Length: 331
Image (cartoon, rainbow, N blue to C red; front, side, top):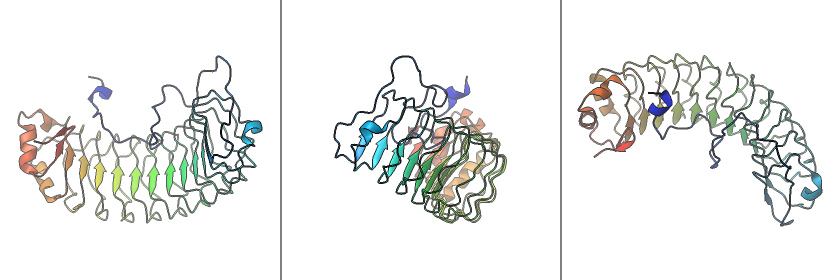
């Protein structure tokens, strides 16, 4: 059976770029079809603080219509054919700018947008993080599914709370020391081989490193506020390195090479544990989950123990309070 057929249907996302209800992209980032006429920006209500021009085949950001909107705070231009960020200099009141799913290759033209708090440039063709020097109020930055290879030019964004860099070409976690307000970091689907350089992120609550090249869980000791850790689709063999992460409520270790459930008994806040598609064959270690009294959801399918005819019953016996086993409610 193809691996995608075996995956659970309610996987946590590899990145957070689709968190606002966007459909998953079908083609290469920003590779929208170019046949047919381009659309135009049309302003209906000049007094509105918001303009939504998603899916309009807009080829360029033109100032003619936009200049009528003197109160513009939120501009949505998702899934268009825009190649360059331009003609936004006068919109200094902008708080949110979304250019998800276009054909942008370079971050430019944002210097005057000093009030910007949310910037989404996911699914474009950007190769370098730059052009954000004046965006000191930025709280959420989405750059997933681009062609970025290095984490740099971010150190001045000290108000940043969410950073999304999933599905790029990043090999090393670096240059995050000053982002002390960061609480969500998405780095899944990159070429990262080691968890490191995160010790200054004392307020980090969510860390996603799914589908990278990790083999060891390490260097998480300082992340004592961590509640959600996603490490699925890696090459991890041993559960370790979580001694100080006692606030974890969600732990995703699916699709690794783990043979034993261990070193999580101290995670007394754990509610969801994903360890499907591993190599667990010994029922003894399942009994150890009885120490996790708040555990309500466990994914154990596609392990050798899953072939046991009494698979679900044995899990219920080990964890009588469990509410969900794999994708099905426990009865």
